Length: 150
Length: 150
DNA sequence: ACTATTTAAGAGTATTTAGTCTTAAACTAA
DNA sequence: TTAGTTTAAGACTAAATACTCTTAAATAGT
Image (cartoon, rainbow over all chains, first blue to last red; front, side, top):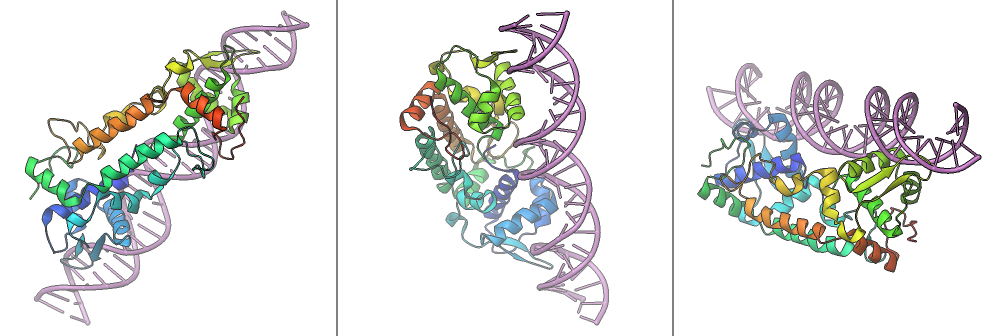
């Protein structure tokens, strides 16, 4: 699996937030229900995004979370790095510690190219671009396709 | 992590076998020591490659495993699919079941391109190409770099 | 036949990831 | 100030992955 489940859930929730265009806080409970993700688990994941500065949260009634930046300024790679860490883009595909120019593995060069391709794909995908595309085509972000963009 | 540890170990062992150019069986014990991989764990992994038809094994004294095809005819993708399965190349990056042309996720198209890039990289890397490169540059296939190509 | 060697197979353990549950703390509104 | 709502945090459980150990089966050499 390329990305952890936590990471994928974080991406889906971020897309949800991007789709609301709202300055208001969105409650995690609401998101968990619409996205069909366990509330407590989603809470933990969004705490990571909050700690990373991608979201800000507010407690109490009418509290919740919201993006700290315009959705057009947030790309998927920020979410991936915040949750899964930078390892995908820094580590050897054979898992060899310190694999680099000095003493590379046989796959080092090819993997470096592929890795950059993955990074570019994620860095070139902003939340608002994907949310707009999702809205326009009523695309799926839940397993059963039940999610309705607003 | 892109590939499981089992998969990475299977790749390293396959590179080892490719580097020996040998028609003989190589014992798993020897490989486990030179590659610094737990013997029993490596045995299990190589059983998967044997079941997939990439290796053939022989029991008893002077037994072991060997490639069933010339190393130039085996590419990394065969090892990846044999051990990690085809999911990396078939599944949605957001983990949505049945994500496809009919009802895709917002990342579907971009991921399809990236996925093919990864597949091409693995399909275009044969064991003998990598083993030759490893030998020529004394490249690393163990964590401590202690492995010596023969 | 017997013994040593080697892979096969299955049970068992450890670690990581995924997910749940409970309590605390912050906040809003009445 | 009290009650209800919401995120924060930590302990806990479940499942998947990673790894270990034991026994069986096959084989080769004596």
